[in-house]
Length: 452
Image (cartoon, rainbow, N blue to C red; front, side, top):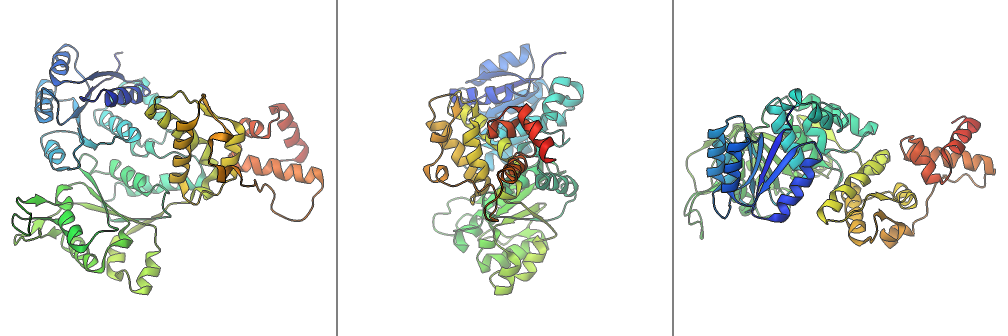
């Protein structure tokens, strides 16, 4: 059986290299091109199943590549790469047959998930055992949208189950949880598993902007609506037609904009700034916040009617301290990610360093862990992250293994310590033995001795 073939067309050699390495890990046959014409010649010789194409190439336009690819082989799925901050051209490409778009700077997990989703749409996973195995590598969840969420703890599995149940139901969703817990990833997963997955996923952060700027970004504006509006511009809500709008930090939205958003949800139509013609919307809204919106409603800073409109279904994401079993998996994931990004050959983390991370509470959650590993991969001069590569303030923290009940007999202390390490490692006995710095046979004997 032939390998599934993927083409990458981008004039940046680094982008071609990074995407090639990432997609090859999924068992795909990848070819990269820095110009459009060589790709078209190769497409005629050996057609590609999925194509990642930059909108602006030295010798071609991404729209032309899209049209010629679909004309040559309609089954080929084209994913547009855009690096200009504006999604207008990407949305236009989707209307002309592109499967989806991805914005620079590229996130490799997002690219891999998009590629898998495109292949699933074409039935490739059913036809190719190699790709089926790659999908099962993401914990065999049967849901490509969840492949970007790393974890096997009960708290994460509960999220997986909720997402799988609610994604096909076209209702508004409110994601709640502390900063850094992965609300944007869950929103993306819901979109990728919904009937709207072949249409835009548009993100907007509601915090830190004036009413006027939020209005022009969400609703768009007509030519001449204000000084500097030399041409009409569609807003993010309008650009997400048939897709999903992710409103991050919705609790930060100013009161006047809360009223306008409420009307949008109720009427499913908008007026551009300076416009007089209502525009109908077909969108799903996923909102996220790190605030307690019920408390904000009680204080009068967030509208109660808007809260209930957004909170049709609520999903609360756990803090990393509530899913410490996932820390080793997340560490491996981020080591792989930043080794590739920094072109380094870091393969693992030494047990002592992992032990320090397992004892840390991570007030910044997954985002903080990612930053720590990114820094460590950048600093280390060998193929393994060591204690010295971790931030000094984390290294200096004490590992509180046994919660104080005064002095304990040595055997009781050892029993509790081993139990704590097993709990922190998700009862992975191999990893626990490495952290305890004892042979596995000794660990097995201790487990039997202490009836653990």
